[in-house]
Image 1 (cartoon, rainbow, N blue to C red):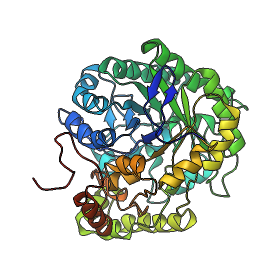
Image 2 (cartoon, rainbow, N blue to C red; image 1 turned 180 degrees about the vertical axis):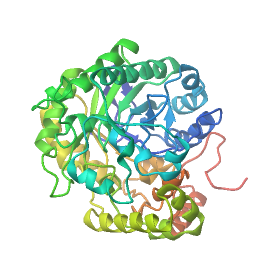
Image 3 (cartoon, rainbow, N blue to C red; image 1 turned 45 degrees about the horizontal axis):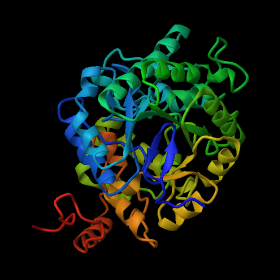
Image 4 (cartoon, rainbow, N blue to C red; image 1 turned 90 degrees about the vertical axis):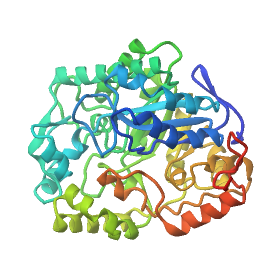
Length: 447
């Protein structure tokens, strides 16, 4: 069994240990402050010891494809170069840094975010195929507006694939160690692989997974052309096991294993298998209904702007309540999928989702995966890595209450907002639980 503290080869690079910070939404502005905010968000994880840090999803196009407020666009090489201070902050601590690249397609925010749509008149939602019947049914409610949806033409699919490669090249020039494809959570890649969303009759469709992998192959080929040899390429791999019963044709775990084989054959350096739904739903952030965040007065105006008023906000809130009951927190919820994938591929397998303790990491590293990651727990404890790497009985404070995620629909920063957790973190900071900073001080201590 691999130890959390041992190094691991990822392609031609080496991670100093097997703990990583999974991609989360940093909510950095598209401008000169982006580097400072990314350094503030990503730096503590690297300083506390993570061997690998993922920067959250970045968009490869100048418009469209945004799934939530605050995602950076990395189609401009000058802007990507401006992120150098954040890159340097992560890498000076010996961590590998990968930029996640994505495009939301049919999950783009103009479908649900009223204010965004109003201020981006004429924007199109570019889909792989016509939406399935149940998606159109939701579109008939006040939750979604499908009036902007248009199916991508074949030449547009090729152009989009090339955009991924160009952005990867810009990331390489700026100093990133690699890129991570947002292959799941309702992204364009999942939409291409899934028969639920891909019913194309041209060269990007087909009855088999390998046929529906053409877009993925074009993206990988483009990245390898634009980025130098040794530049890391990793990807999420979806299994749509959390799809509602009325959805037919969803990707099974066996399909996910086959996609992992396809990705390995295409030349990726590591794979992150995740069990998801067919939209960006509770399956990506399982846990309790975030009652505090939904009812906090600070966010009400933002919710109303996002969803289009009090009535629509209430409708979305109750849908979230139902989803939290249907998909509650599950420890290590991707473990079984990762084990199945690890038996089928030779490249490293990375596991995230419901990992909350040092004992969880030991179980996952015992045959299920080669590295383990966490996402929301780093909102609660930016220097959580120190405890996990130095305390054999360490457990994250995060309780998966999701009070960190819901305000993000308003453009709010992703941070822990649960008073009990913040109080516990403060006590641990004062006790020196998170190690020492560069100046020898313990985080949170005065003077």
